Image (cartoon, rainbow, N blue to C red; front, side, top):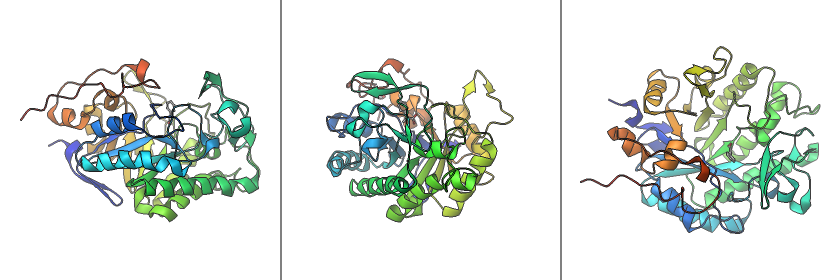
Length: 364
Ligand code: 8OZ
């Protein structure tokens, strides 16, 4: 019996199988950063009965925006478009949580209100490009948030969580991964603060934990998930002691009783884990976090089965395979071949490479 098709619980969510749709930035929103009919069709196609979808990363504030084309939840005007998405997912028997996003320093002045500098824990620039309305442009030099501004950013997350509730989601996931704002606070390569939000890990974790608490205040802990990428270097991320940093966070999130922790696994190069000995993975965090664990990053059916069987994760999130296979859970269940994906249509564009991947013929 396949472990992937055994039911499981993530807090208040009862799921019929363990093939989770990972959060995927696709940059196909409508003007005003609204979710429109094309996005609704895309999510509807990927609704598998009793499965869990994590929405694409969705900024809770204009300042938290870094990729033109991403949909928002920073304004009440965004609620209706998302409501149409959640209604369609629910009609198909699926569940969907919204991933709440603030990019922090991974932005550009052209995307910021009044052309200001992006905000970050410290004024340290990241390598890489933001996607402005005029194309890719190197991340701008950020400014360090003033201590008195931090409660306002946490309030933006709270409001995003409340709007997600008004839009009919089943919960929210805090995007604490991939070098965005909460991760920038967590890791000491990007956090050089000397106040209550910097220095020892108890201080560096404060921002993420306060944001998580704000979402819990809106939803209850059993409908709030958190995503972390303890081994990721995307966004020029580094930490002098990832074991300690992420072990502490996992322990605190465990105490808070969140619905699930999603962990981006160390990337696999060929068959070797990168620096396997000191990489922090789902298996490492399992020691500190006893709740539901979702592993993500480069899984196929066999490796997904194996990590669940080993007890290192309860479910697995699939990204690329879900892009090109709208009916991925059914294909995995029946052990059928997968459509290949086309990377050139991942970010931005229209229906091509988004809603035109074929589903299996429905056989009676
Ligand atoms: C790819 C392109 C843009 C954003 C992430 C939200 O890495 C993203 C993202 C991925 O989590």
